[in-house]
Length: 242
Image 1: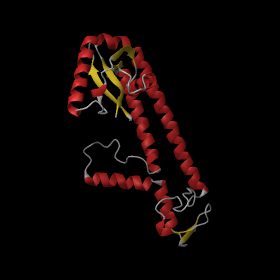
Image 2: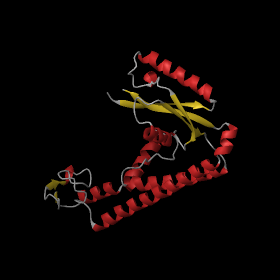
Image 3: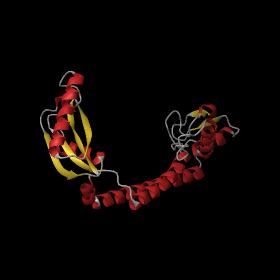
Image 4: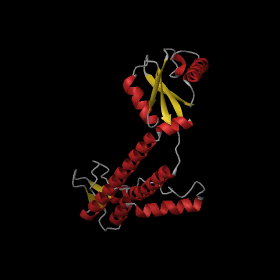
């Protein structure tokens, strides 16, 4: 029998109120599923461990519970998570992060992985969407390479890795369709361009990770004020029988 991780979030409250809420959730889950092996909270009548511990977010809460209470027979665990904090500092960090995400997306588009509609709003019409996709295709280095090779006179391309002769009309990516070699169509210039794009993506990701860490440190510093203001919530979770 396997297990599945289940969780609930509850707004800030005292421990007695939390216990009552969790008990109701367990009863409701057992009633809805009709058995104690539901893969939900219905079988979690082994108690509730309440930790007066703040973690940064839901991911960190899951990691903490998974590390300390990894078994499906373990009780549920309640941890505290700071609520949303929107002040000049957090807004500044989020704005900087979004700018970097936009730049990284531009680089990912060059590899065919980005989102051409990112930052253009939910109301993007059909024509605007098509134009965004068209521009993304024009920036896609792999498509540029394929078009260049298709314009060459030779009908076949030989893979230097597996020595297969590939009819160019079957090349839809710059990888060899036989062995998967990624350099069948690449010139040295192509390789340098792709390496440059990947390096920029790695650089942007490092900057994003740094900003995420900065935001977590700041929220941690504001923890006492957030507790006083009631700006936090409970995360209750645990492994359940599946």
